[in-house]
Length: 357
Image: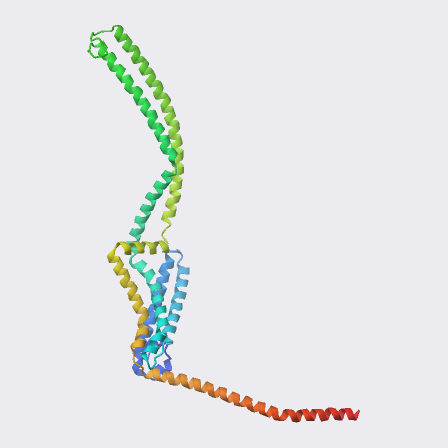
């Protein structure tokens, strides 16, 4: 038996001196020990990856991963080592129920970070989609929180509409003046070409409309510039708020966010759901395999030797207790016999001292 085999037997929780006396059980315990060992290794890798999504420094991740691996190793080794073969399967199964439940819980804890790693690309795409959706919602909420921008924009539209109205009126007067000069007959012109009284009146109206248009245009453009400055200030505030939201969204890449993204994927995609379920069941079966092996295996030579060894230890302990109790009883009997004589001698001695005085 080489060192690796001895180590795997140690991992199985079996007592090596007894296993050496049972060659037929060696490979069974080697298989159980290998399952316990590799489950612990998977546990360390799993928690290491989970912590790596939270911490950037590899050293604390490595330290916690090793500690977690050792803890799971010790726990699994305890589970399989305390499950003993009985004469009745019902007694064994009752004994195994809490261990099976604990094994399932351990398997679920181990499987989840590894599922996150296996579906990493899909989870990253889902996180990107959620970020875009969150950004879109944030933009809408932030924009709704600045109603002044729309109000100011409405004022600009009103001022531009006023400028357009003045311009249209000026263009209308320009057309009437041109028609009057060139003798175009319309409802508002005489139809005689040349500069006459009507043409001069049309020209005066055109000059007045042009002046009114220019004044309105200059005044409204000043107002528009002032309003645009206010809008720029509000836009800066809105952009600052959006930048804060973007930082918050960009940092939402931790373990909880990835678990939530995986849950969304399993709900939306049947293939991912079944793949995720199969991976989880695989780890559950790996974790429960050593227990099932011990449950389904027949009571063998190792089990008889172990019972005999433990019975011998208990018997030896009882013998030692009986021996010490017998010695104690003997000392008490001797004490009970000697004590009255000692008291009488003490009284005589005390009485002799008194008489001597």
